[in-house]
Length: 166
Image 1 (cartoon, rainbow, N blue to C red):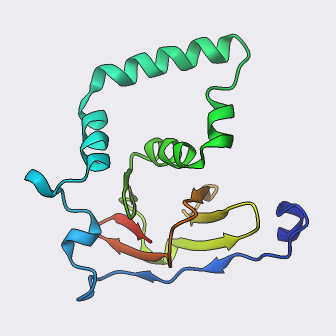
Image 2: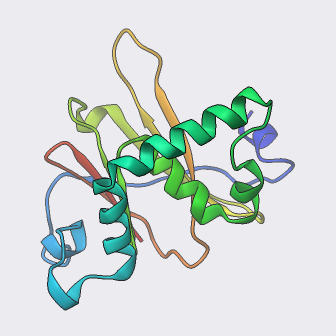
């Protein structure tokens, strides 16, 4: 069944091990602690600006309403040609943040046993599948594009937040 979703490829989803503690090599800086001063990356400062700029979300919401009302799918063409934007939009919908070396998604209320993470490498692009199970409800399933230059995926679930690093 999965091969049918992969457009003729024989690639399969590979499970990513989920850790619940910080190891010596994964200190707080690599988990996404806010950088200060000149140590901050431009992408991180830009993401923080968008989080704090409340007026921009209202403009984006109104823009999306106009596009949907006119029968257009918002930014679908951009998502196809720039997978990084698609990743940023999907993580934003989950109220997470994209870091230069990964992403962080809040999953408060979920248990480690409820979270399944796997990757798929096919000729078109690398993808990450996140499944969060909740009793009595449908599973939350998201498939995110991973940047081509990403290395091995490391997953940590600490204090109700899913930290993915590559």
